[in-house]
Image 1 (cartoon, rainbow, N blue to C red):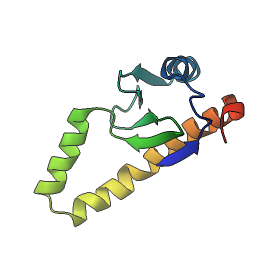
Image 2 (cartoon, rainbow, N blue to C red):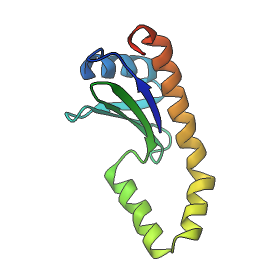
Image 3 (cartoon, rainbow, N blue to C red):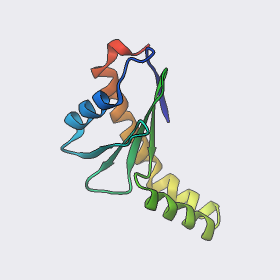
Image 4 (tube, rainbow, N blue to C red):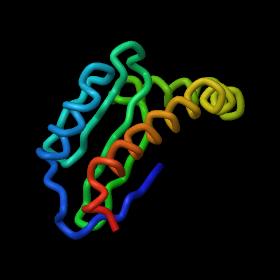
Length: 118
């Protein structure tokens, strides 16, 4: 998870969603929840995604499974398969991809909104 410190009330969730949608629209499917969360999942692989959570002083970028169904499937596999083997599969198959999408979104936000970051 990446955390960016922002100036208080520097971002509006609708503006951030619009900018992210314009930049990543061809590669990612960007949606805006009413709970100040933007979910960007890849259009080619529906299991990799990134959530942006906006608070008053921080913008948190968290690579995760983009839908509740995918997250519940991962948890069920973890419970049924034990802990060690599913965690190894997660580390090998998903962790690197989650970090890559986090880094890509973080780099874009740092370049586009550098005046609003602390």
